[in-house]
Image (cartoon, rainbow, N blue to C red; front, side, top):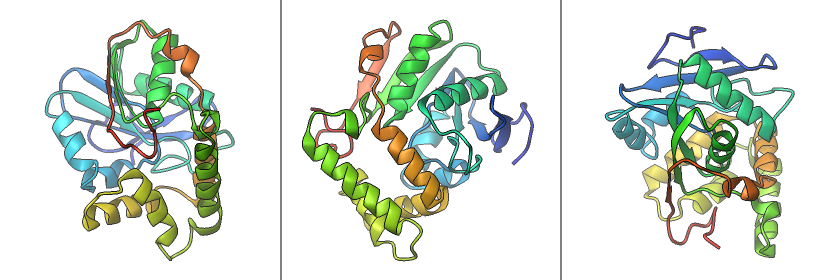
Length: 240
């Protein structure tokens, strides 16, 4: 990892406002697209992953895709003092500056959709449009369905008691929720991403933070074009 604002395809480090080191990388050439942070990231492993590698490679054929590992995981600092919604928005601004982005589209995946919405509302002069995939504006603890709270409790226990275990059964629990119909090699890759992306402690902090997201009111204030894509039957972010 280099400490240089001029790097492109190799991971670089940018310093957030509170001194946390955030890893980022650019890929491709063309109209700029900044990917918002989501659970979980690893700049290098994602490009080798059958889950994300083909997607990001294809996107980079048409644009300059800028990605970063959110604080607490990937190649960024794993143990920052602060993991919060405000910190995620601040880190997004840090990476936009480090990558030299003035106006850009935002790609939000999962909870990255909520962060994209907030950033676009607070920085309308910077964002040209939003592409929101498989996302949500309210975390599990902010949803009216009591089943979401029960599932949150079950997954919280799995993180707390089994994330660092060599037995992959706990991580399989997550994988089966995110990609239940995945072929074995794809499921194994997603399981491995979880293992290498972060520590059990940081995984729990990120999980708890995302469960308390609530950008519902902000979503009504979006004034840039937005493309919203969602899979029917999504277990992580149900349509209703």
